Image (cartoon, rainbow, N blue to C red; front, side, top):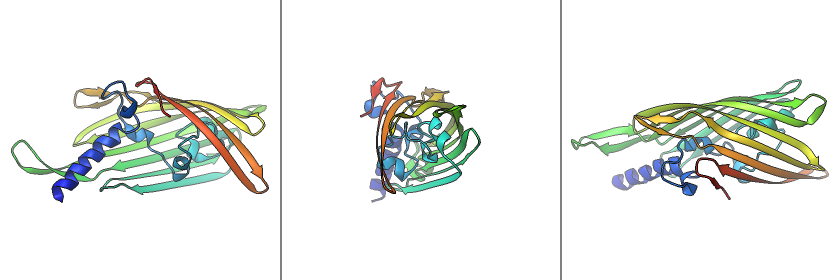
Length: 243
């Protein structure tokens, strides 16, 4: 059972790095930093993360910072998820509105825990399989005298550790959003994870750069609101569209 658990954890670590990205990649190692693509809330995951055109929710910050411009007041979102092995993921987002838009911040954390393995001298050692921390701060602003149109940007910092080897990188997101482009229809476009490489030892790995285009339709039925949304994320390094 111990060997099986170690084997399973190794698969989880590799999958955490390659899931989403390398499944669609032109070649192995096209992008790293898969934690940047983790869903930050159950709400976003529930609609397949089609959030590029969704307005007025702090959950939209990691998908299109322009979308938070429409939200009013203060909002806090938190998520924690246990994996199939000892791995876990958590995220906290907070935002507040201002006169011309809103600002927000988020912290995400992924950890596989300690993994037992044998070194070249057959000594049993424990090392962190994978541990990532992603912090971001951003703002969404509306255009004066034209509040249907908003723009936004966010700055991200990622610290990553894989089997004791550490790497850091910085990146930014930017986006535009047009609310009520047609009655009850929003459209949005955003670019994500544009920045420096993650460097483990001497090997540099690109971040998973993405271009997102999306649209959403909202139907009000009394006090109830129904929304349908769709996103087309394009992986820039892999030159593939996720479907």
